[in-house]
Image (cartoon, rainbow, N blue to C red):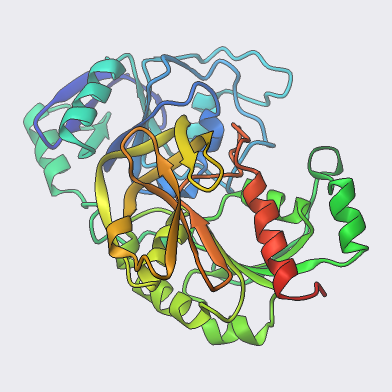
Length: 379
């Protein structure tokens, strides 16, 4: 079945559909990961986006039920060079195309993804539309131009949980507590409240593996109720959209700063920066992939990181007498992390849980536990 992808700048690509037959709009971005398409598709941080994979062959290891980062695909659409309906992997339970069709997600294959990526790198991420219904170029370009812009868009409220819930699941073979941590905790656990702005399951797994007992709350959950729960620490999750639009989140974080240890990732990092008086800005084409080099300024070590964001914190907007910049992106020198010099809080822009990898930054979960340890005794 013929499908077309149209960009707001007038560029139109013709390819073949897989997954669901329909029409969808979103911000067109690219991801440079070689593997992990299932984790990418189910990452809530991609809500509202049409994701292009730069790796040419997608679908060849199928889909399984273990690598989901949320309950369903979160992308608006999927773009690949070559889709493989025939899959081969001992863990696979079905094909990527059938799985996308069940969840009504449209994919397009057979287009020049290298050309598309170069356009996005040059012009920037753009609004786009994929369709199997309307194949008129002029009509599709107009639809792309009329679709929602990511600037000013609060998507955290779309992907967050409706009600608080507890998470205490841990795979003993993959995520068992390290012996030294088990000995230090001596059967006790850290009670952590997780603000769900679009949290990934592997973040929850990693927190549990470091001795945390989790309560996940909606994005707009009142700070007063969080403090009434008397947690040992507060985690601010990843998520989609424009951080400046999540005003309720910023106001809640302001009330929590200095009250409890705080660790933020991705959107949580950006919201924490805004709560501290900083500013955020939209990157031209964002950082998306599993191969982004980040320098830890405190250790002078370089970490290869997994990233997915279109906005960044402006380090010049943070008060240097209070905030220390801890990490920087070596591709474009944008901010990738900061910590408060006095208060127990820190955050990073990238994804240290890194499912499917790399795992260079997993130490940050240990730092969160150590910060809680300095501030109090686990329950």
